Length: 249
Ligand code: PEP
Image (cartoon, rainbow, N blue to C red):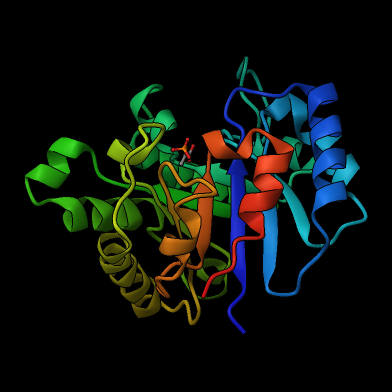
């Protein structure tokens, strides 16, 4: 059975009270289905509230949007993987395009964060994707493979099997433009092949970039997509519950 993963990235929205109300509203509109799972990435301050509200639903998982690589210490403003775990996070995004392009995160930073997440027992969701200029120059696959190789250097076997990769072209995030299912499928094939070649027997590769309730079915009809990572269209629990129930022909 194809098991889809729907991941919501709330970015810098929804504080603890709003997170609790959101998860409650979502649960009321979405019953567990064996053919899909749903992950939420609230801002760090709302991880505990979201995780507690989702607690008895094994198909709902809460993660954090970023972790710092040191476990603890004098790193004002940062959240480590063990601290996120204590708050109830079971996963973390790594290398989201806003971390890379707004906060200047480097490939080397993603490698360190990957190591920290895996060491703490979090499920890393590594985000990769090219800018418009890189795409126009025909460098999409080279950029994606470079980002994979950097973040996953030294990760293999069982650890690699715990990593989910989200292909998110930078030009499609929050812009209303999406990759066509065919274009996304071609990049996913490359990513899957790369992960296979390094010992991950069944890697999960999601697509992200302006996915919404209207375009999700067409994207998910492409069998290379194991799910979607969604920002804007995940912010309202009713809309998200509808998107999560998209039938993937
Ligand atoms: C994201 O934040 O990962 C994302 C894909 O955003 P959006 O769906 O708003 O493009």
